[in-house]
Image (cartoon, rainbow, N blue to C red; front, side, top):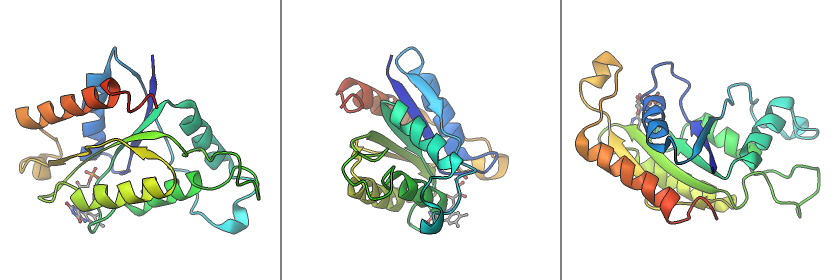
Length: 185
Ligand SMILES: Cc1cc2nc3c(=O)[nH]c(=O)nc-3n(C[C@H](O)[C@H](O)[C@H](O)COP(=O)(O)O)c2cc1C
């Protein structure tokens, strides 16, 4: 069974994007193995500490390399992706050994699905910019990405509720990502 690494772009305890990822994890049951990336301890990138890579960076690189594909669930911050997401992908874009630009980086060639939930814009600015970033660093972004609007009630209950249309969109994204061989590469 193919292994998909889930990356959630929010550390918030009741993150809607984490709830969304949980839902998609359920859809993938029996179809793919889901692993979750814990990257809370990855430091801000700083070339003074790049080599040898900090332990947390080595750990996330190994997790990414071991996965057949990645699936990013992220909120939109000010029309773009959160800084923690940029920091993670900046680390993943760098050579594994100082000066070695031949060996592929951890992210190069990885197939990535993108999904996000947020306000009325349904994370469109975030997904567009994240697609640009991922393409720039050599990942293969599966199209179409999916953006969903958080239901009104959730803003007070912190409990995300998906409607039937949203559930259908997610089921189609799962089928497309698995079925068209996008994740297999
Ligand atoms: C710094 C910041 C900027 C935000 N900018 C946007 C935005 O541009 N578009 C949007 O839809 N929501 C924006 N939001 C609201 C988030 O989408 C909302 O809080 C969402 O619940 C965050 O995702 P999470 O529940 O997974 O943490 C912003 C939130 C923060 C903290």
